[in-house]
Image (tube, rainbow, N blue to C red; front, side, top):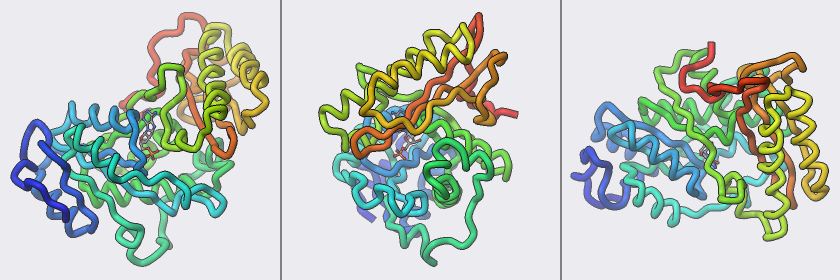
Length: 311
Ligand code: AMP
């Protein structure tokens, strides 16, 4: 364990100085026992940015202590995906965690998380895991839920913070917690964007300057769709698609307006909360983005990402 000042672990205002870095289960167990009851956890794959920092901040506001996990989970990457080139920026990640007052960083290697190799028993995402992202990335959500379940157990956290940027992931984690009764509170945090609308993502590091310009069409499409939300589903889809077709260098995988609980396309008569979501390849990088929309006249408050689990 890399220690600095273990006595500051119990500080109610968050840790002063660098977080304690735990690499093994034993180190985490011992650090966890020092923290006491109220521990919020932010799970990440590293390459931290302001979006992750916002999750940590929200967690710090509510909980006495914060654990951040940094783990590039091989189980959720397909054979043709970007695991080997995924950005690894541990030193910068530590600077961010230090600045945000994180108590403990759990940064294990795969053999620590999967000591017996690939787990034979996994969490199944079920039908919600086969659509949208799951269609392009078979097995992704089973791998994601399996590591989320393990990290919930290993960290012993009481609340867990996830970004709305990964809306399908958030929905599936909520479902897992409900469907198999995890004693965990799941809290969602709105997507953090650049000033020009681009959703922050570790994968933005892959974008060239010109890719980045192209990538703006995702958030612009969502904004265009949301702007005509009062007119109904076909207007929303049409307005969003019109932005995307003007950018032929963005290879659109899907643009959907779906029910936030079922991820089914909403019919034309639908009024209420929906999720407008897009995925596209820009250069060599697959990007996703989404926004909640209030379909139909009146709009109103949206609970798409409500922290009260959907029935
Ligand atoms: P990742 O490291 O990409 O697995 O993301 C770790 C957590 O950060 C997930 O809960 C993501 O949804 C969240 N996250 C990623 N990007 C953003 C963003 N731009 N705004 C808010 N949360 C984000």
